[in-house]
Structures are given as C-alpha cells and as structure tokens.
Image (cartoon, rainbow, N blue to C red; front, side):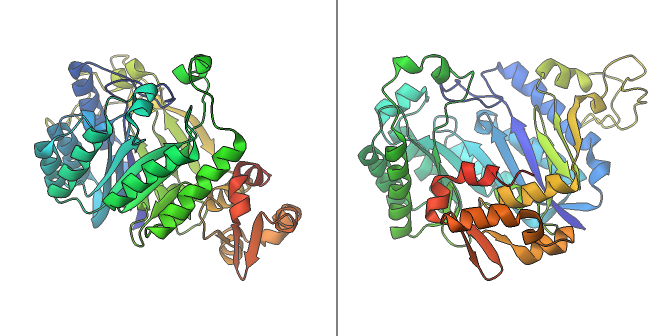
Length: 410
C-alpha cells in the first residue's frame, strides 16, 4: 500500500490575531458541532478513494483545533480509524494555543491517540503577545507546556515568530533562550509576513516600526546560533528539531516532488489535497461546505452519517441538494513541469537539499538538462552549493531563499 498524510482543517479560534490570514475565525459552539459532524461525513464519503493507501501522518491544523472539545477530536480520529488504514506508529499532531486546554483535556487527547503537540507561543514577551492579539500570556504558555509534559507528551513543537513590530534581536534572543531552556523536541521559527487583508496590514501605521532587512537577517542568525548550541539542527528553512523529531507530516509537503514520498489528503473547509498528479482544494465557503452533507437522505451509517449511497447526477442529489463532489475546487492536473518545479523549490527548503539522482529517476531527465543556467547562476553567487549528488542552499542562500527558489519556476 502507498503512504499518505491526512490534514484536518479546524477553522475556528477564540480570537483572530492581527497578523493571521488563515481560513479561521470565532464561531458558536453549535457551529463547531455541526462542522465536526460534517467533517466526519466528508472523511467517510471519501474513504473508498483511498483504499490503496495507508495513513502515516495526521495533522489537525487551523485555526485553533484545540478549541474543540476533546471528545469531538476523539470522534474525528475514531471516524478515521474506522474507515482508513492507519499505521500503528502514525505521527498524529494537533495545533493548540495556550488557554484552550487543561490537564484533563490533554490526558484525553493522548488517550485518543494524539502523540505530537504544536503549541503556538510566538513570543515570550507579554506586551508583544497583547499587540498581536494573542489570548494568552507567557505564563499561560508555561502552564500548558508543563501540563503537556505531565500528561505524557514526549514530542512537542513550539511556534515562534520573529521580525515583529518593535522587536529587535535582543528581544528575540530572550524568547529563544526561554524556550530552549524548556527543551521541546521541535521549534518552528518563522519571520512575520505582512499579509494583505489582515488587521496588521490595514493598521500597520498604528504599530511600532518593523525591523529592517538587516535586523531580520541578524535575527535569523541569532536563532540558528542559539538553537544549534542547545541541540537543535535546522532541517528546513524555518524548522529546527532534535534528531529524530522532524515533523514527518510537513516533510510530505516539502518532499512531494520525490516519487517515493507520500501523497496527502485534506479534509475540511479550504483543505488542499494532492494525490498522484492531481491537486485540488475544498471550498472556502462554510455554508456551501455544510450544505453539501446536510441532506438527511444522504446517510447510510447512523454514527458517521455517510453519503455513499446517494445518487449524484451533475453534482446534485435526488432532492436537488448540493452533493459532496461540489466542494472540490481548483482541480489541477499537475504537468511534468509543475512537478519538476515543486521538486526543486519545495525540496530546496530542506537543508539536506535535493538529489540529482532522484530528479533523474523521477523525471527521466537530468537536473542539469533542465536547470543548468539557474544552477550555475546561484552556485557562482554562493547561494547554492553542489556536494556530490546533493544540491542545497548555503546560509547566504537561505537569507534570500525566496529569490533563489522563484528562479526554478519553468
């Protein structure tokens, strides 16, 4: 059987952060409950398509998935387990924010099979957290982290963010030192991106100045230095781990171009999937998503309310209600060029780089035959280095990675 990852989108949060452009927002408990039931229906409805797959990773993303009740998360996992072949050692991650869990909830999540936590801290400075619109303090984070350890979790990621308004490298250093002292297994360290449409984008003048480009690079070097000194290695541009604790699920995305790497199926509002050479995403329209599975006659299983036995004609059920197929949008057949581009600009995010042999095995043509000019350009400028079979970004290349990686678009 082939391996795949499963992504589950939970589009709810207690409060929208000023920098967030993810598909998420606050919702009533009733809305969350209806969404969970719909998500389970979608999972079961799609199950037959994945009979030839086993699930190696499961990732609850959002939003803030931990805003759901533990029993709702357990029900989603039970639904998956009943209809999909899940590896006994599958990595099962849930993103969470401090203030949305307690000790009892964490114990239940572990009992239900969650074995990896990703805790969103962003900064150890409470003033910065308030500015960002976070609902927690650093002390709340410490409580959540300690309770997670007490509940028996041995694989924890902490999300951090640099280049925030008014932040300098010394502020960033203090956050890194506080977090590394806790010894989580994984640290994600992202630089703030000002995304169009966010509260920060529209009111940027109300905030302290952003660090300039030089300060941003200094922060990146500070992270690399401190994390290396405390036992973390950089395995991807923004991700550091102790050996053996790399995020297996995210590696699927970065290494998608390599033919032996798993596909991924996304369930929930706006979730993306790539299976074989076909990519699609679910609708971003909540009402459309819920309506697709709401029809009462579209059930053949009392527990999970499946839609398998319904007749689908031109995307409609017998009652005229929208059927599950209609939630899929932006369906794209990936061309050979598309896949070569992804092999390069996603694979080069990994610090191990990309393999020329794997490129040739996958596409039947040498990497130099397709990218000779681009490779020579960036190697000569010291942004890429070739070592044996491997081509990877240098430290200087990581600093300007967006520019380098964009050059691999054919």
